[in-house]
Length: 217
Image 1: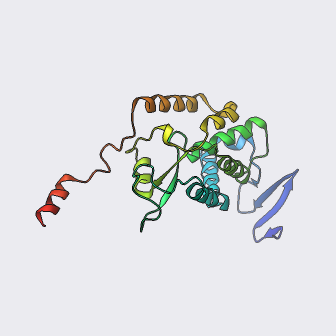
Image 2: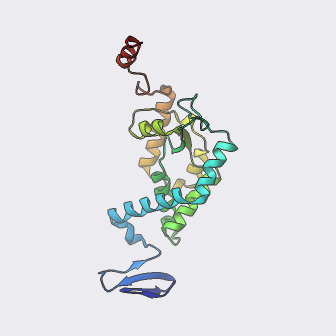
Image 3: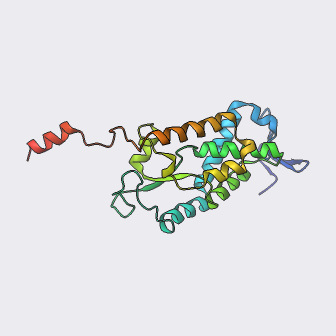
């Protein structure tokens, strides 16, 4: 890559590569400082960019294949009769039910900040992908329709249904897990002890439609 492009220049401030432009009022360092994350929008954008890197990485695709082919999680864990072999069915990885991919990225970012390590979206994404490969990221395999309903809050999945050693993840990153995250874990575990899996009827057939269908027979 050339050091300079029209209106854009590349340089180094110490060991940190920097992108600058005469059209910009500020420089963009490759490695982010602690001050960078004090801005809420910058923090959110960084996490979302890290999520995109994780999902687009070949290691992520290979991990999903590993879950389907080696762990045999090739069927929906909510609609158990639905498998990846059915026509038109996609079995997707859902991060959770306790921590989302955003949560995992945020916790590992905080860990890097505490350790005072160099931070970039690539470094955080690499750490998140490694945690996947070590099976310390809790996830559930579900069909695309069920995945949408989970994100809409219409399906409750006990944490015991998930694959992945969440306890080991929490132990490793304990210093970076905020009281709010710890409360989130405890509340979900308590709820899981009280309630069975529940779709709250969103996956039931509409009785009126079913009745009309029979009337037309």
